[in-house]
Image (cartoon, rainbow, N blue to C red; front, side, top):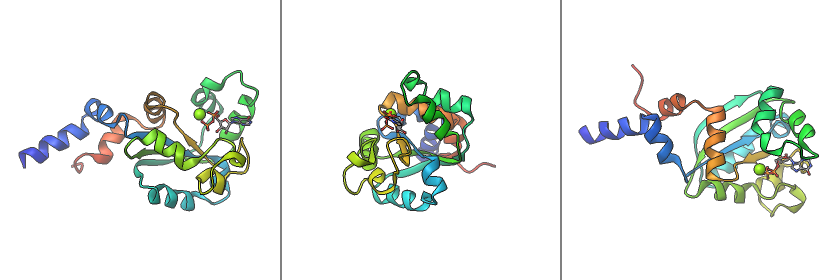
Length: 167
Ligand code: IDP
Ligand code: MG
């Protein structure tokens, strides 16, 4: 019992938990095109079939300012305005996924940015409409994953999801 309590304390401690997640965590999003097309269930089924554990999940509607901040790294690129408009055009599903080597594994599962270049069987090949409206997002590094998880999920909420039952 003492050991179990120590473990629960550890995973519900925000700092310990965020360190514990590095390397095995990716942020993922089902983008507005796929939500609008009614593909949330089919995409979540593939997430789980591919062996990812869904640690956290939330339906979100990004404001323009949030979409600009989330994709700030692409500011100045020719597709930035279109990307921001698209990402706040409707609801999206934000997720924290867990698996060994999660960032690489999730990018493998979603396929190339442009569905025309995505490998057969990948989520973008199956569900994306175009390079811009490409169904899903995936983090590109462990550092980005940590930033993107924090953008959508407060540490306290992540801890509560896995911690002991609240009184
Ligand atoms: P990624 O999502 O595969 O990591 P990034 O290059 O990081 O691709 O681009 C972020 C998002 O911006 C893409 O998923 C896509 O929605 C959009 N995007 C990227 N390149 C283009 C483009 O050439 N035209 C339109 N949209 C684009
Ligand atoms: Mg990217």
